[in-house]
Image 1 (cartoon, one colour):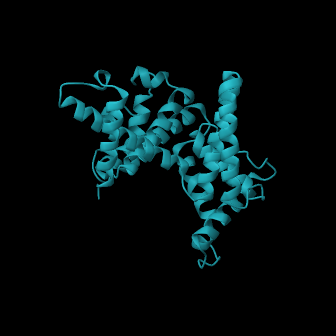
Image 2: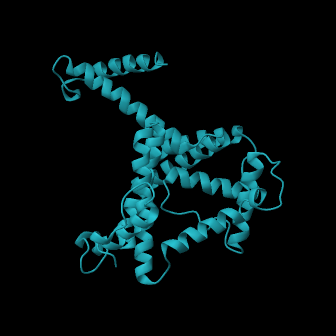
Image 3: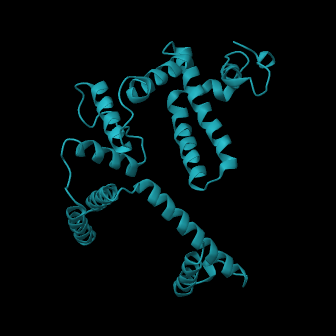
Length: 272
């Protein structure tokens, strides 16, 4: 294992080798970082999800100056898992690179093979899914959709997979009818059912909302992230305006904050 003093020199040409050497040094049983040495796949996985979300967040905010760092953090997660896998004799980082390279070549025969490039993006997506299905072989249709995905994203993927075999409503009209039905069931559950039953009904409603977004070609996860950002921006304006009189939201009431919310909404509509 290389010691920190043996690391490849920094610079534009140091490439992935320097990062791999840093990771190996961090995990060295004799000279590494005690925290890093103690980590496992399971303990690092939450950080991997967090870093992927931070990449998406930087892109959503068009924070291009931050994106480089966030992508580096995400790359480090791949290196971290690969180092632990190498130590356990499972595979190496080079194996990871080979596997993804081979997969990309196999799934793009219109670029790396003899198939025509004269296809729409939609047709290429269908071909991609067909290739993935062939790779899964006899597995069940919904297998392979990670349970750890954000719930709305996973709902979208489950629905897309089922739709490929015709299990789908033909238009948004049926989805909207189902949405009204599920909303009615939530109201009934609120008044008559247990908390567990109410939770189930809320889940059904959210699942249909994801389906409606899919039919309208909207990414529900991106839509909800944007709504969260909008809520944060508008509520921050409420705090700003209250602070002008030396107050916080706790010193206000719903009527005043609602009026300030409408003011913030009107301000948003004037934004370019």
